[in-house]
Length: 638
Image 1 (cartoon, helix red, strand yellow):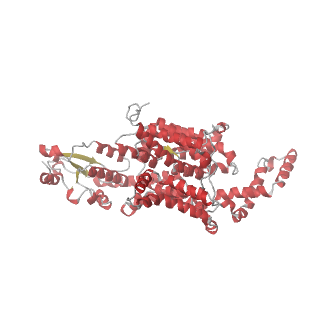
Image 2 (cartoon, rainbow, N blue to C red):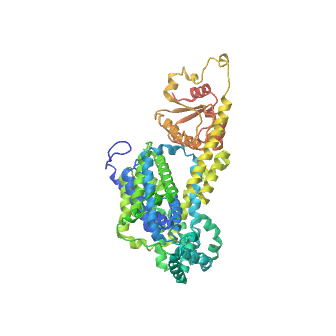
Image 3 (cartoon, rainbow, N blue to C red):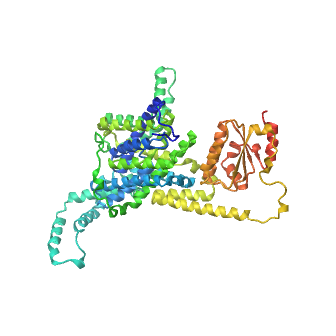
């Protein structure tokens, strides 16, 4: 097995990989349980997804440090998919489960296909405002859908909601009985016996069956963001203060545990030891254990998570019982949505790891590995997922370097399922709700939101359109709309720039000096210390990867770096943030940066984001190359 650098996997970092994997697995435990419960398939489905996606994605991945499993964006889409499929089975989850898992399985196969045809290389063309709006929208969805668990409101136990949906439930049950009848035009006398039988069955519908169906309908009505908003008055009128207390306590522990421990004095060795232990424990795990323990000791009557069955996940052979195109056709959009989102989410994590390790992942291999993981998860009843950025970075921070760390994290979760499942089943749902609320808060793109006043109106418009469509309509449509709007804005900008540059001049008016020839005749002393990087054309979302590749070519012994932007007419938000990362890293490496020839729009953007003067002081921003040489001759260390 080869790594992304072409070397065989080694065991030189076994200790680091082991501790990195253990840490990532511990962090994944509460999240997997929470995402499983949120999906509607139960906590076990989240654990199974974390185990199988984590194992197979790590086994085959290109980004070796990555940790995969259920994630917030994938779970948000899964909730919508599950809800849609269940509706076609009259709200019966047990009957709908094979079809749900079949959709997950096919989404994994589509990811594999995308990897085989090399689709991953096109993911770099997704603009930053689209990603920003999408991630913020996902955060809003998670927070909104956890409002009722926060309030302790359970719609299916609300008498008002049940009574409101009673007529709808009765109508639905009647419809299920009579759905096999032919149309009135084709009925014959021979059908009278069938009609009489249906009428007899309809009269036998019990009040208990109607109430049970009304509960299913009530539960489904508050699954979506619109449903939460529409029925918020019911939640506020039926607050369960015990549930509210434990959700709030969970959030408080997650955000405040480490700060509280840091307030402890260092006089006693026991406090020092406690601080060291606290620094290595994930806050979500601490909240899971502490708040669950308090709930058990207090004897509080709380809603607990669905039972986690002990033992290895069972193979779900039933998903292939209706394997045909007519069976797939109603779910094609859901399959496409999951595959695309899983691909985008995973490749974004890989890009982040590349920036930290100065290596390059193979996008095709990454998609294939994630597709295999999602397909295997579906075969054993797990929910889909993708590369998890936070868990991946935590794995790297605690020593993980190779795919072994991901395998260790997966095997740790498997051990929990095999031996500690009864304990996991005692976790209150309010604890997992608190975990999800912090996930929703953490996943939103605050960097993009803070920069709203400083960004071009077009980028801001795209970000908010994508966010609103994500929250209130459809996630894939949101991304698609964002891409289309971004492309239109970009084409308009490029058209304006091309129009400005179009002109006709006589040769004798151009002068004797051609562009960039002003760099000739440099002294050997200056050439020895200075590295010049020339940028040409607009710096936009499709150019950021190439920009970072150019940056990687700057040698370590270069003390002074001149970035020539004489021919950069336009820079968008994605390009601006890529340049910000480059300037920050150069500053960290103690390189002196000079900017030459800034045009009006790029300079305006750099000043709005305060890269000038924070990253590059104003006295190192020059109009011409000759002015920069004068500064170098005065300041260079010979």
